[in-house]
Length: 223
Length: 82
Image (cartoon, rainbow over all chains, first blue to last red; front, side):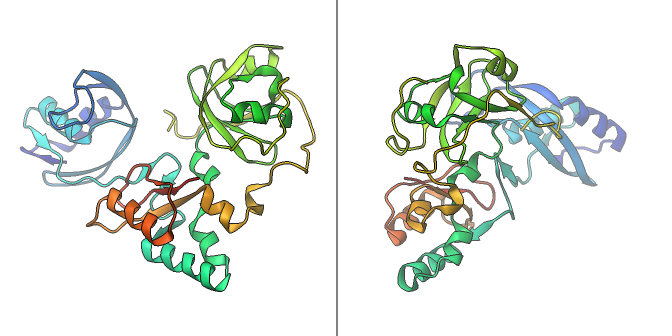
């Protein structure tokens, strides 16, 4: 962020601290989404470096939070104005920079080394099991007998559940797994973690995205 | 992301069962074909081309139909899917 005036360090830090938590934002003119005021959470805002009017911040925030607007609003509150000078996104879900990353060259080379020579080790370093992408979601492990129904898009009923990770509350995105660690589907929790354990019946998760192909586990429609 | 950065994860157990070895397969045991069918690549994308272009290249070079990208960090995030 670049400030348009000089602000004492303490004042800057204390104003920035105020932005942690829920904030109001209206998407800018150039945006893909409807321009209605909405609430987004700033989970954490760290000031890494202040150099004159340049402020380097690291912001952990909810998806869909506009950093440009955040900088603008900080400037308004401070009174001098500010704008976003530069943006670097460092993490989204389970994927962050430097963790198991590969370049296009790595990918293409690894693929052809496998295709032409049958050597697997390189492609296996670049292409990770799809489950890697959901490791940030809480997991629910289900019985073998429940898998095929979910693979057909059915919601998950409580009797099919073996274990749940905590914390899960209603409305959370959840990843449904087999006991072998295969991702079956992703859904939204209809009840919280404890309720999934103590209930004897009821729907626990609304299946939203099916990942596993049906037929891998035998159909046993009694969940 | 959660609001407090160190979320204490726990596990609640409802019941125990043995999984049937005749069906399904652990992700680590997948063949490369199966991996390419449902896999993720954390792609360090070159700065110039757009994510869409990169996805198109991957489709063409690897000959895989279903490739999607799940957002861009200033390196990153591609996905190969079934």
